[in-house]
Length: 435
Image (cartoon, rainbow, N blue to C red):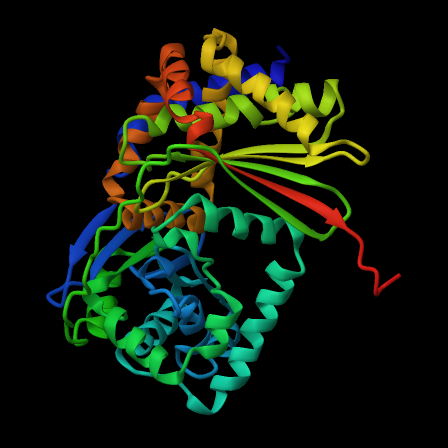
C-alpha cells in the first residue's frame, strides 16, 4: 500500500470516533408556530451561508395524467427576477425537483443572506404564477424533456425501465413528466398544486455557514413566522407489490453503443440493511479495482464503463441499479451473462476482509470529506430530513463500520435475486432519414 493511501486511511480512522458522535451535535432544530421546521448548523470556516427551503412534494405526490406538476411549478413559482437579484448581491441560486421533494437554495455572504430569506418567504407566502408566461414556460419544459430524455438514449432507457420496474408506485413516473401530460397541464393545475403543498407546515429550512444561530432564527422568524399554516396534505401510503419474476424491457433507439441496466427492489435508509447495500454497491463497482470493473472493463473488455448505485435516500423503498456501457461490436447478452456470473459469486461466497475494509474506507472518506462544503453539509441534512429524519446522520458511519462479511453475503442473497429485478437493454439503431 502506498504511503499516501495509508495516510488517508489513518486520517479517516482518527476522525471516525469524533465524527460519529459530533455529526449532528451542533445542529439546532426549531419549529415555528405555523409548523415550519428550521435546521441550523454554524460553520465558520468561510464567510458564506447556504440557505435552503425544502418542500415535501415531488413527482411522488402527483396523479396519473398530471405527471410533471412539481417540476413545472418549480419553473413557474417565485418572485420575479429572483436569480437576477441574488446575482446582483453576489450570490448563487438554483432549484431542483426529485421524486420526493422540491428544493430552492442560495449561497451568499453572511451580510447579504437576508436577501435570500426575504425572497424565499415571498415564494412561500405569495402566488407568483404568471399566467402570461405559462405557455412559453411549458414549451421550455417540453424542450428540456426532448433534450434530456427523448434525445438521450441512456436516459430514455432508464425512464422505460422504471416504468416497468414499478407497477403502481409513483416512482414509475418521470420527475419531468410524460410529454403528453406536460402538454395538457393547465394553469389551474399548477395553482392547485401550489396551494396544496407550498405551506410552512409542509416544508423545512436548512441553513449552514457563517452566522449566529440566534440572529438567523430572528431573521427567519420575522420573514416566515407570519405565513399562516395550511391544511396538512394527505400522506397516502403506497406500497409496491412484491415482484415475483424477472421483467425485461428493450428499447430500440438511435445510439452509438448498447447499454445494459439491472434494477433490483431494495429498502431505503430506514432499514438496517441499507448500510450493507451501500457497501455492496462499492464492492461491485466502486472504482477501478472493483469486481465488475476488473472483470468486464479491464480483463475481458466487454464494457466501456460499469456502475452500481444504491438510492437509499428516498421516502419509500427504492432500487439498487447496476449498469454497463457495452463496448463496440460486443453483444449485450454476453455482458449480461458475464455480469450474472459475478453476481452469482457475490450471492454465494463471502467477500474478502480486504475488499470489505477498502469499501468501508471509500464510503467513510466520501462522507467525511463531504463536510468540507457548506452546501454539501446542507444537502446531506436536507436529504436525511426529507427521507426520514436528520438525526439518522449520527448512525451512518457507525452502521457502515459494523457491517460484516456475513452481512454483505446476506443482503446480496436477499436482494440481488433475478426474480426481483428488471433488465433494460438499449439496442442501437440508425436513423435512415439522416443517411
